[in-house]
Amino acid sequence: MDTSEEQVFLFVENHGLQTPFGNLYISNANGLSFSLSIENIIKGNAVDFEKVASLDGTYIVNKYISDHDHQKGKKRGPLKEFDESDIIGYENKKSRLVGGGSKADGENKRQFMNRKIEETIPALEVQESVSTYITHNKGGKWELLRAPTVTSKGKAIDCYVEDNCSLHLEIYSHQGELAPVYSTSSSIGVVLGTGNLGKKLTGNDSAKNLYISRDGGLTWRSVKPGVYIYEIGDHGSIIAIAKKGVATTEIEFSWDEGMTWTSLKISEEPIYVQNIIIEPNSISQQFIIYGVYAT
Image (tube, rainbow, N blue to C red; front, side, top):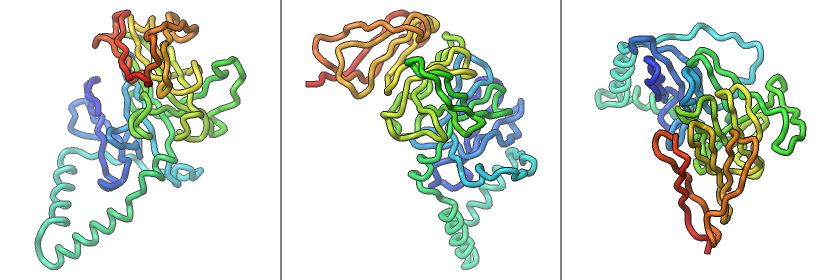
């Protein structure tokens, strides 16, 4: 998943290939031994794992909240480490169980497949039980995202982690149609995301808002209601956004990290904006906007 900071983040589908989540492990310094960082990270076409590009050790994930996660006071044993020999041993065991062989081997294969089917959880159930977590110390500790204190219109928000309420953001797997958490290496601390407040990530787009963090995900501010497409330029000093799925002749941009916004006309005829892109280093003030005409 990531090798940019001299350690390896590894995603393992150890709940069965058909289950839409897996566990995230992190390696030691030489990449030979791994330990569990966080369980039940969801996956679809991609794993819901995103690095905050401008800050070391900061990552955001979406986690499936199973029944045992809600059990209070349940003590867990020490995390088990594994290394290359464990992986080889597991692959050898799997090949014996699912490969050809004797009648006993066939029975073992059926037992193995039945166990995997029993472990499988429907993707819809997983998508309905997703919460967003962040780490600032490379997976040593994961925390829920604290909600903004006010809405984009200045109304107070009563949502606290202590009351099982937090901010949840789209990454890749949930629905797969909305802009994911986004940051660039040249815009220090700036993170954009589409999501909602509550106990879990919702599939209801009308409940979603555009959020921005200016400190690498420690705190968040509600920018605008609705779902948007976005891009960052000039080291984070300019942000361009466009409404997703709404025909428009304008986009909006901000020179102050989302504090104020200015409209810019880009077309005589309404278009559906499909994407906003910039040169790879995200240091330019020029954006390319493309889409399709509404009529």
